[in-house]
Length: 145
Image: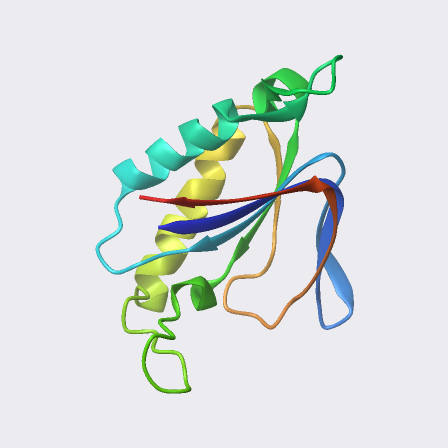
């Protein structure tokens, strides 16, 4: 799994001009699922993200977790994160999981965040989406496992 995580003051995703997911303060998570990824990997990333101290405390230091600030999440599936551009001029997506496997893990990932009592919104799996965000900081991190 590969994640691009952005701390946001707000974010939304639209499909065909209609808003399908919208959050306030929290994290936009772009999630790519690779062949062979597992539920255990999803569990590990959910735990890491929930406890990752990237929100500012009273002294302006990144010292608070998503749990501590009641962060919201917008999770968007993005298989293009797995594009390999090392050879040629067109990305190879050989490492990306098949759509049925990716969708199951994506939905599982979202459910595990919800199980931690977070407000979680999503994009639409396998759709063309317009994602808008205000990156707070900016803070952008890449997580892989």
